[in-house]
Amino acid sequence: MAIFFAFIIGMGVGGSFRVLLPPTPTLGFLGGALLIFAMGVIDDRIELGWFSKLLGQIVAAVLLLASLNGEGAFLLSPLGLVLSLVWVVGLTNAMNFLDNMDGICAGIAACVSAAFVGLAVLGGQWETAVLAASVCGGALGFLWFNFPPARIFLGDGGSLFLGYSLAALGILSTRQTEVSLSLLVPVAVLAYPIFDITFVSVTRYARGQSLTQGGKDHTSHRLARIQRSDRLTAVAIYMICAALGVLAMVLQRLAFPPGTVVALFGVFFGFLAFGVRLARRAPVDAQAAAGGISDALTAASLVPEGAIFELRGNGSNGEMGHNGQDPEHEPDVEPVHAAGASSESRSRRD
Image 1 (tube, rainbow, N blue to C red):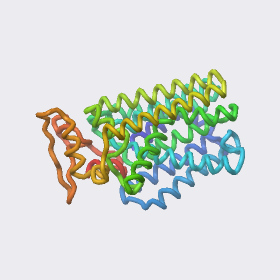
Image 2: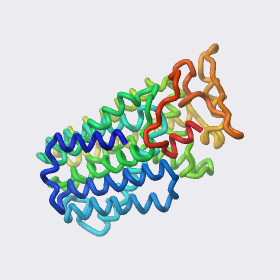
Image 3: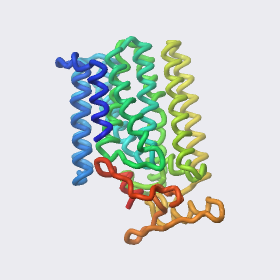
C-alpha cells in the first residue's frame, strides 16, 4: 500500500488535483489506478481467479481510454482501441511478472517513469509529467526498502498498480504528437518489461509449462545465476532501462521517423541476442522453472566452492534461501510483507 499512497501524496504536492474535473485524463488515470490497486490488494488476501483479474484490468483500461475522448494515436480507430486494451492489460501483467526478485519491479518502474517525465516535459505535457513524477517518487521511495536484501515487498497491489501506471503513461504520452512517433517511443521506454514477458512466455510454451504458473525462469533469475549477485543483477537491469529511456527521449527530440524505426529494430535484435545468451548460459528445465529442488541444486553448482545454501522444503519442493541468495546475506528477521505476495513473489517464498 505504501507505494500507492506515496503516489497520491506526490499528486497532491504536484497540484494535479485541481484538474480532477471529468472527463480529464488525470481522472481516468486515477480511476483505473484505484481499481487496479484495490483488486491487487484483494488478490493478496483471497487470491482472485484469473478471469476476475483480467476483467478488472480491462475495466481499468476502459476508464482510462474513455477519459481521453479519442485523443492520441492509439485511439484513432477500432483497431487502435483494441491495441490500447492489449497494451494496458499486457504491461500490467508484465510488471506483475517482474515482481520476482528484490528490487526489480520497483527499480524498473522508477527508471521507466523517470523517462516518461522527460518525454512529457519535452512534449510540453505538464499534467502527464506530474503523474509520471508521482509514480517515480513512489517507486524510488519504496525501492529504498525493497533493494536486495529487501525488507518489504510489493504484493499484487503494488506491482499491478505500477504496471497499469506505466502502460497508462505510455498512452498519455502519445497525445499531441506525430502518429508514427507516438506509437514507437513508448515501446522503446517499456522494452524491458515487454522483452521479459515475451521471453518467459516463449520459453514456458517450449517446455510445455503453464504461462500463468509462477517460477524462477525470468530474465532476472537467469541473469542472477550468471552474475551470482542479486544486487548486480538489479543494477544491470536498471542500467538497461535507463539507457532505453535516454534513447526514447533522443528519438522524440530528433523527430525523425526513419531513425526511430531503425533504433527500434536495433533494440529488438539486441534483446533477441540477449535472450538467446540467457537461455544458453542459464538454462532451466520445467521443475527448476517452477522453483523445485533441482533449481536450487543447479544454482548451487554455479557458486564458488565453499558457499553454503540452506534448502527449505515445502511439500515436495525445496528452495534456496530468500530469492536464491546465500543465507548469510539474508536479514536476521523475516522481512515484513507489504500487502501480501504476488503470484510470482509467492513462488519464490513458498
